[in-house]
Each structure stands twice: as C-alpha cells, then as structure tokens.
Image 1 (cartoon, rainbow, N blue to C red):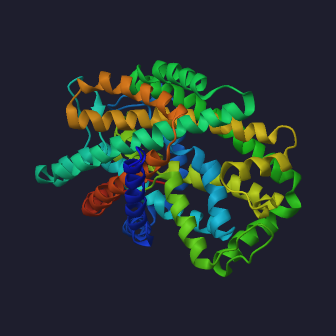
Image 2 (cartoon, one colour):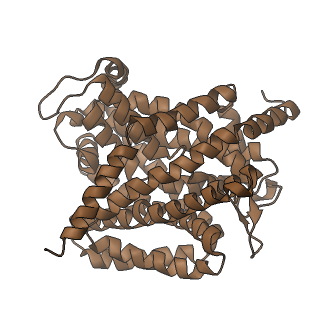
Image 3 (cartoon, rainbow, N blue to C red):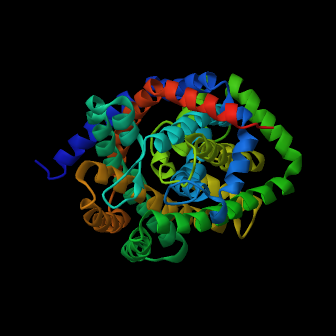
Length: 457
C-alpha cells in the first residue's frame, strides 16, 4: 500500500467531517446567536457604535487608563484585529464573490452587524470572568468564562474549547499563514520557501517571547499602519472610478436578492449561494462567535466589562464593514470579479487594474503583513489555551514549538492541515456559542447596569 494512503484517507475523512460541520446548520447557529444577542441587548452594539469609538479613542492613552489588566483597551482591540484582519479580507472576499456573486457582500454586512453583538458579549464575559494565573497575569477567554461562569461541572467544556483552539491555531493561525507568505515572497522576490520560513521564525520569536505586552505593542503599530495603507489604496481606486461606485453598491444590494447570471468565466450564483458564502466568509473573516478574540480582550486594562465590550465589538465593524467592503467595491467597480479567477489572485488583479504598477504590490505587501500579524495574534490565543490545559510551565515549550511550526508551514503541503483547521474551528465555536447563550442573562444585566449609571448622548 502506498505510504501516502493513510494520509489520503485521513484527508478524505476530515473533508467529509468538515462538510457535515460547516453546513448551513452551523452558519445558522453562528448567525442565530448573534441575532438573539442583538435583540436581547436591544440593539446596543448598533446604537452605541459611535460611543464605542469614543471608548476606543480614550483607550489609546495609557495615562487615562484605570483598572487592572496587562494592556490598554486599544492594544487589546489591535491584538484581536491582528488575528482577524488577514487573508480573509483579501482572498476570502474574492472567493465569496466568485462563488456567491456580488450579493454575497450584502450578507457579509448583515453577518457583521449581528456579529457585533457576539463580539460584544464575548468581550464582556472575558473581562467579567477573567482571573490571574500563577505569574500574576490576567488571563481569560471562553475556557475561563465557561468554567467560572457556568460552574466547575462545565469545566470539561472549557477544556474542550482549549484543546480545539490550540490545534486550530497551529493551522489557521500559523502554518497556513507562513505558507501564504512563503508563496507570495517566492512569487515577488524569488526567495525559496525555507529562507522565508527562517526569517519569519526569527521575527516571530522576537515578538512572542515578550508575551502579551510585546505582542500588543507590535500589533498596535503594525495593524493600523497596514490597515491604512490597504484601505487608502482601495479608496484611491474608488475615487478614480467614482462614477461606478453607486452602481457597484446597488449591484451588491440587488444581487443579494436576485442572484447573478453567468458572465464570461464567472460561474453564476443564486440567492442561496450568495447568502451561504456571504455568511460563511463573513464569519470566517471577523471570527464573531468563534471565541478567539475574547482571549485578547481579557487582558485589557479596564474598570468595567461593558467598556471593553463596546471596544471589542468594533473589531467586527472594522474588519468586515470597512476592510472587506473596500476589497469588495474594488472587485466590483473594476470589473475584475468577472474574469474567472478567485482568491488572492483575483484581488491582486483588481488592484492592478485600479492602480497600475503598484496595486499588485499593495496586495502582496498586505498579505505578508496581515499574515504575520495573524501569527502573533493567534500565538497568544494558543498560548492561553495551552496554559489553561497544562499550566504556566508549558508556556516556554509552547513558544518554541510555535516558531518551529512556522518553518514547517512555509515548506510543507498543507491540505491535511487546512482540513484539520476547518474541523477544529467548528469544534471551537460550539462550546463558545453554548456559553454565550447560557450566560446571556449576565451580559444583559451588566449592560443595563452600565448604561443606567452612565449617561450616553
């Protein structure tokens, strides 16, 4: 029997399992939880959006921060965004439009608006039920609010989240990202994959060895800079093509309810495909409901869980409503979405059409930086999961294993890892969604109490 046969069988098994897990049922669970929380919160995440940005602006100033925690609220949000703004914003949007038509973008917007409630609740619970570890450092996340909020008899469910979270991190947050960078660098600069892997290993180790404070310090600089560069590039293209922007927006909205007929190399899509891929790519992009972001928000220096919840929900808005929308409008207004390509190649071509000579570089550079920040963000998530399971002594060993996996990812074939990541991400989401629903009365009560004490314009 060929040596590759067991791996092939495992791949087939995981592909089948992933197909069962990521059915419309899972997407309904993610979306349904967001809708339930949105209604239960009386639309606070949407109504208090600008108030959240005010909290974020205040959170940039270290001297104004009160309360206990390791990093500022702004740094916590940037750390969370470092893990969410990535290839999903560049390649994921293009794939959603390729498979579901421009209408998929509308359903990404809907997903983001209800996903803000999920992110809000996650951040509130993360701060409410966080604790200090053996080093005196604040830690938290779904595994902690499951155990501390639902009671010790639910601790096994928190442990399950930690196991699946750690495994998923090595896929979606590490090897997949390093492989994407290695491919992009080889294409643009001709560097072998192993050279890129060694460079990434060195840079990544220099960041994660400093723990959450160094990770947050790097994230609060890299994420805004790269985000501004990418969004500015998109805005330039939209300004040049300003006459097509209104039509492009109307195309997205109308296509959400009518579907798209086949054009050229484009396969064509119906309304259900637009909904399915819009919701799926939206959830994958902003990670609302998956339970990853609250791990970062638990470390925030704040006096009230609701304050951090208001900051945390902005991650979904920034990731999907702003960054993903910029990508989508460039794809639609340049007409590149009809050329039959998909993924990052489609986005790169759209930017090249809109910004000849520099557009492709903006996308390539964006992929590299976004992938690197994703690796440092997910390194922290995985570290907290490992600590929850094995204690603080495992942290040093984890960090060494994390950087070694970067090199492996840069040079390896990742079909198996992609499948493992897909499955474990679903198993991460299930315990977290259950906890959000069961602990929703706590979120509702804390929110009412906060706004009863604070007059908000």
